[in-house]
Length: 188
Picture 1 (cartoon, one colour):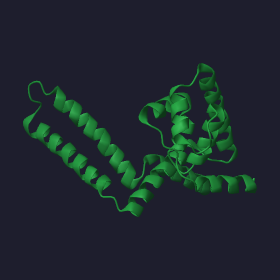
Picture 2: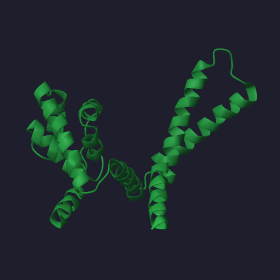
Picture 3: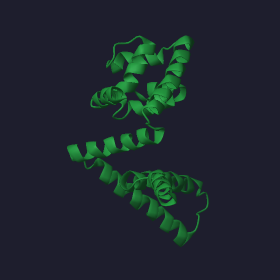
């Protein structure tokens, strides 16, 4: 088990897999756990599974993307089988899909800190200002005639605001896991 974890750690240090939106959509549909892992620190592990099924060289994201977009039904079935095997491997290593999601967010945060990129902060401030501005407008003036577009915009900005809060302050999933752990400790 220790050797397997060391191998996983070595793989996690590699670069993440990058695909275009269409190829990523195919991957999310057929193999959602592999797609989630591909964007984060477990990208090389996901890339190995993808390249084995599609017959591309490991680490060649361009070839894998082209193969995903032109995959045969048999290859898609094999990718679905690889998804099942990947989930079993993650369970063996005691890695949950929530951990993959957390690691993906942590990877984005680490990138932001390393590159000192202002774009996420500017977008966060813009979305927050837009959300509360439209909310305030609606509270002050009411819904204008034909204001369905404003309601759609408010919903979109509200969803984006939720994502921003989760990015900067964490999700309730982490809090729920912490609460469950504390409950286990207290009940002993």
